[in-house]
Length: 299
Image 1 (cartoon, rainbow, N blue to C red):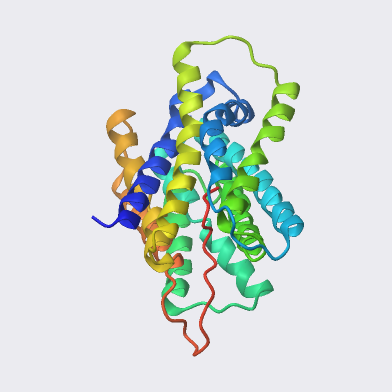
Image 2: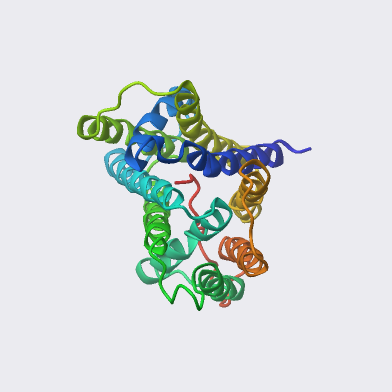
């Protein structure tokens, strides 16, 4: 097995576990508290990042670091709203694949602001994503808009903008340095949250789960970075790692005893297909090559 493929599988698995852990924590902590305490689990990964990418040239360190920090702040907000969506009583098996469609926002921003072009597969991914949103959220009994949908759409927006900013950051500093500043943004955010929402003692199970939440989130980022560093192609690694719901959904069904309808299964399949299509970096519809715009470090 090639090294880059092994690291890609680790990223996929790590994010798959991360995506389901917040459901286990449940209402024991608020979404903001979950995000704050999960930073503890990120610290070992943050400690490794300064040793990666040493000696690589940078164009504009201050600008690149500032943009990466902004991306980290938005990713933090995306995580909080994602945890809120899971705490609204909806099934993780439907929330996870829906929120995994955040590349749609990244692509739209790149097209509008960077004048990048969509290929036909990505256009198909947009259609699939809209169909998945309809199937997972619209029913005759609940009407067109479900209350929890807002909480699911917010992380898509936050993570999508994060991906765009991460792309801009790596234009000025190496990916390893961008990842470091990205993760460092979570530390002051955690301090602010804990100042506003102090936390007392709680069950050991909750503390273990929330620390694991941060660890698997950061481990997925590090594994993705190492996959790129080992020579893997972005057009292969990106869609592979973005399919982490294939890990989360079985965990939700088996570990959390969630049940999903045939309609939801079809919606989940469409969501997974849209993630793969939106991440595809093959030849664009025009003769001009399209830049890679997928978020290289997950929100």
